[in-house]
Length: 292
Ligand code: SIN
Image (cartoon, rainbow, N blue to C red; front, side, top):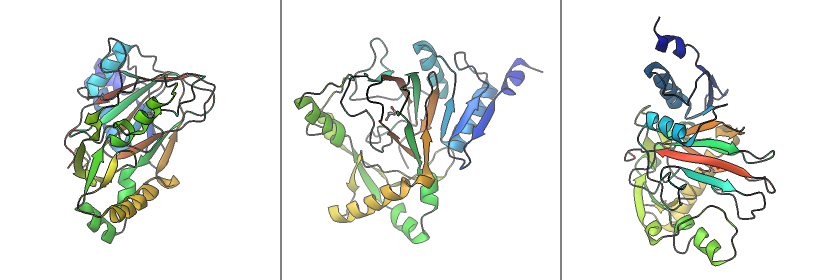
């Protein structure tokens, strides 16, 4: 038996009961994965949309190398990356920090880009003893469960995405920076953030070919061609629908855990609740394609 075949046998994929989210053990991500193991990871990712690998103490080089095994790096705007590591963002909140924790709103990463990242990888370096979970919402099942009439209405719609609300010149972070923020992360507020980008409200996953809702309260401004009140009503319904408990997986971190999520069919939300404790995470993204 070949070495690759022996090592593939060690992979264990343990899905959540809903099928959304799965733990993967039996791998050493600090070394390049043999093709069969990498294929198994990619299959689990396609099947479960959020996968996590406990007990993976990765260096920066190893995190970058594993990311590149999944695909080329995405482009990460508006946040200053780590020194000498243009593709790694440090999501850091000090124990004495009072600024709202980063990512505390439902979103799909950088959905305002023409080609938003397919995947995000987040590696936990320091985890608080309480709070700091990440919540994930399953946009595929949320779409599947809609009535045929609602699906027909949504299928043809185009949503307008923008980074304006958080990163625009009149956005949340601009407002914060005008005051006395003690945020550790360096956010770059920019006029670039006020640009808008249309994407289908329902997108078809390029790997699974399944449809998923692709809107979020952080980055979706409205629906093309609709009056504000109309699009607010539809989007408000969708946000409530997608984030019902039955579609949400609450991820509890332990140190040295790597989690990878699929931005094409999920939303996520960084929960707080850890004031007084340090939380440090390292994040990379994998480039995606034009949503269709
Ligand atoms: C994010 O990438 O939105 C932050 C996730 C987290 O820190 O839990």
